[in-house]
Length: 147
Image 1 (cartoon, rainbow, N blue to C red):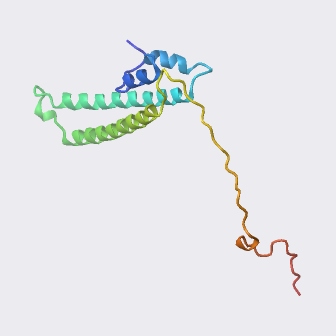
Image 2 (tube, rainbow, N blue to C red; image 1 turned 90 degrees about the vertical axis):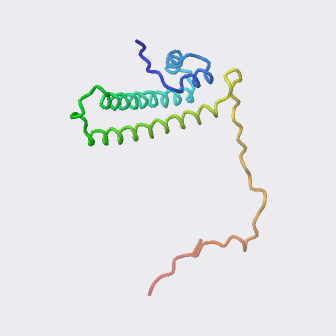
Image 3 (cartoon, rainbow, N blue to C red; image 1 turned 180 degrees about the vertical axis):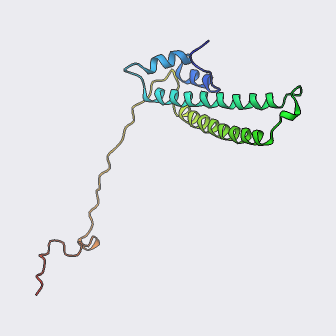
């Protein structure tokens, strides 16, 4: 059995990073691992756990609704609780999938190295006339003495 649980986004991760998921985890612990890879694998781990929760609730509901099961064992309260649990797990799964999808969409293709981001420092080139920028009250003024 694999130590790494599968997720529905594993194929996308492999496409973007160019390796199988277990190799990506090995690369992520290296000293030169990219922050994007670490973040993607963190989201992937949360996704895999959440998908496992969804599957457990689904399987529990299927077992409870098995046609061969005694109808006297059915519990509306238990099914309501499972429906709430399933809704929460599905919401979490959708959130993790969206976050991971957005991260992967911003990654450069695996065969193209990332380009460094250039930022320009803006400089003010216009000067304001003295009347346009009033000095705060009492700026530089000596404090008046009270009698």
